[in-house]
Length: 628
Image (cartoon, rainbow, N blue to C red; front, side, top):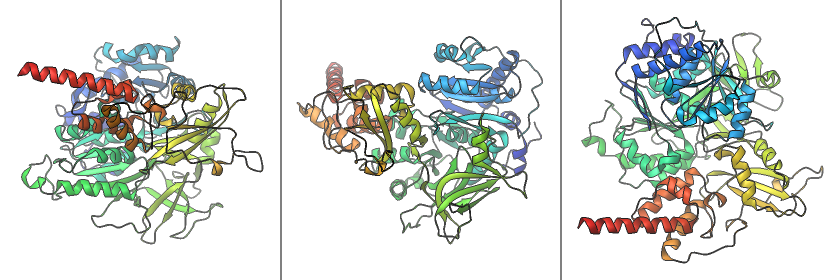
């Protein structure tokens, strides 16, 4: 382990299993901070110890190499060492989040067929439900120290993780990530980020998605620190403050989250340690670049008086755009130039990473010349192994390369073109897969779930954009004859079975679905979502007080609606966690008292939020009077 080089990230690392690289980092950076989150801070030594504790417990449970181990955690720092402990044991880690609906967790567990479940005390009951009394449950708070022992011999070609995503069949699908496929993405990322031990990387995704894993390993394999922030619970207003307090130097998030953060910032917001912003998980728009440039403009001058944590010739943060997918890992990256223009309105995703080649083909699979649009095809020796327990889908997606047996070709389903200068542009999807808040969503899966509701005759789901250009899901429902089920019940049904980013923001009930000549739903004739208040079972009640009017105005602006009633639930009028975070930040500034995100979501309606604000204002006055 001591002989494994750490700087820079050499190509030889792609042949070394992940735990071996982490052991070397732990020896070199033992007392440096590795991970920080709401549940505390972990040094490299403590991180390695927890990895070893979990790995030893799994081996003691007689879990065999390449068995699956499901992990169930909330948004906490300990989830990452736990997942890496599974990998060190030789098993395959299947990370799940506690916020995932129980029905979806059950379906994933049934598909993965785990030999063990790893969790914490907070999620122990749910973990036992997943285990169904047939496999052991390991609770990390109760683990004894791991003794000195020999660890299983691993290969870089071994499977390390199964990452589950939305599936067009209506069931989640698992993509098997090998050590090598994970490390190729980390190598490409760290080289572009120029990561050093002084860097502190912001991480907003969970350990169950690729971006979370990228942020974590990009820090841990270079001696830096990964800092975890839960936007859904803590909100955007706290995020800006947290970026400064944690001295974040590398910001990594979806374009949607960055867009939401930028909308809450004023020109006085300063981030003196920030040197790079990496956006991925979805298409980056020219509006996102404009938001970045406004942020950069506000930083001018602060570097002249503030000593940053990193010596750098650059006086302002740079913008890096990453293009990747669960099926391909890293594809390309692009550093946006200070004066770069986008005359066709498309922000490029750059040139391919080392070890990856890209072509654009027509419907017959024939290569297209530069400038012509077609399907993006990726060729690499570092692609994931394929789909878990789905050889047919694997064979359709991953094609052999006759003259290069170590390489394969992946048909991405993405549309794009290669510009004459060699830069790749991503231009959307050729199928019905979309990105919502950085998460991949198969529209067919959402439609299938809604159609299973006993009151729904037909369901169609489209991705639309709101007034600000943000993507959102719109569900169209045709109810069964004689059924008067409130649309709120259908949404509640969806939220029980789908993660929140897959639950449509708007539900529209139609008398009948528009049909094509063949009798199928004609999605091109589905109406645009209304800008006025959606159809709800509750009667519309307009604001009755000045405070309710203030709150309603903020809701209308953030949600892009012309009207909203004081008893309309936020989640039923297009709200989600990110929009709620924007509302929380703007409302706190408008009323002069803090309205935490969790309280806003719990209160749900304008009337309840107004009552909450009134009580908080009264307490604040009472406190001020008492102090005087």
